[in-house]
Image (cartoon, rainbow, N blue to C red; front, side, top):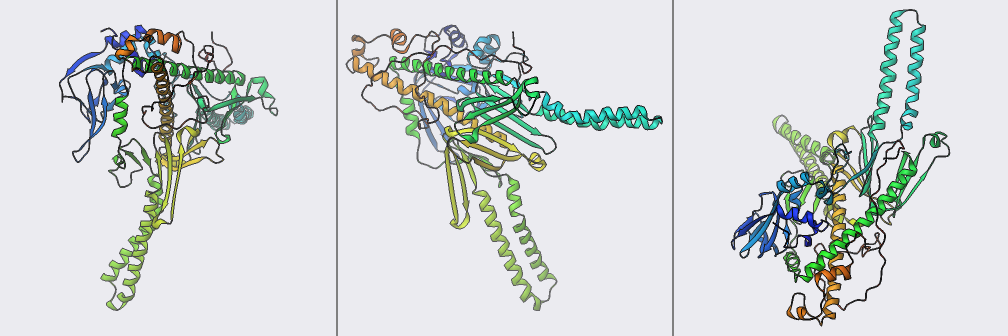
Length: 619
């Protein structure tokens, strides 16, 4: 099947070359559906992506009460289930043909086979992984599907040796003492101890050194610190878009720093709380250069992606396609409060998924147990005393013991209600645009609600401290904000590393939505300008065909810029003050055309080279 229906207009395929688009088109399956026929059902397995070639379809969700809530209208040229190409998922809605419809399906199996047979295609999607290349361990951080590791290194080897010199010296001294002893039994015992005790200490210091690592990818910087004895695990990550300055220094008090080429690297962000300090980094000059090149390459790639999205949006406009699906999706939203859809089966649920996509977290269940232990003990003692009063105590003494028991029971119940209500209403809510921290006390004594924007987060850190926290898998999540003196905290939450990755994923999605929103706005402005030049005609209309409107090819090559690898800057130069966006892309109201200012194209950025931590330059 040849690509004659505009695959390049789909954002997922916007970066592909014509030959790669033909490969995707050859894997598509054409399927016809009658009006009213279901294309896929809610709750079934999502095994691929659908592209509507002709006709319209309706997306709707079925509620437990049997009612159906419309979500969006899918028109020709639009696609759904892109995520199903990369991972297993469950359909969250039903798609039904509103009229006779032809859809093109790309199965996940066929797509995976294409990636295996054509490595360049996987590289275009950012999924290429060379054999033997270092991967981020799942216990440290979740590697994104479009993320590539540039370097994974540890602290300099001298940081291990400077801790291991004492056990090594003790081992040598014990060996010397063993040779001086005349009694063979004592000599052998001392030799054994010299291997056991100092050897165990050196093994511990080595494991401590190997546990700490620094990972630099093409999207973020990750630092992992772990301590074996105290069971502390701390993961800190900074997105490249938040990096403002990179400094390094050789400690003047350490004479070995310049000799062995290690030093301290300071990654500065917009907020002082989000700075990342990396000690004992090997080859700090080269490490600084890598991050600077990585940062420049990241900006260049973001600008190039934005440029291609604008080109695809403009081609849609020239083809006469509108934003009816987006308008229908936005109009389908109602003011009804979100409902829990997962995580509410248990009485002590600490993670609840809402129908609008938000995730609500509570503190770990151990916090509930710690706070309600004394009230529950009082309740049990009161019930036991009442039972004993009825069974063993004479009626004359019951006049005294029974009221005491009832008062103790009432106090215990009120204390349990207070503690349970307090735990149940301390919430951390993560949504697409904001993170909300809610702290309430019963009887309207206190109600605090702190809301922060996702794009204001500079640095996200998760930490698990202590043996009990490691066993029960709870810890803290710390968020450093731009312009804030104090960080925001998630205290004693379950699986803090997963919450950290959820926040990072929302930040990544927010940046992608902002890019699509900017592209839609630029498409709208340019389209209105062309309408004005051509007498206010609509794209695809009769008057537009008769007037001197430039063709799609000429417009793409002249108005936007030739696709020669050059990169145009994104429309939002201030990364620290991003504009507020609606959750869904809304059609922009008609406005007067704006004059375009000349701009220069920056030179192409090269992908930063990887380097080895031992200082040797790769061939």
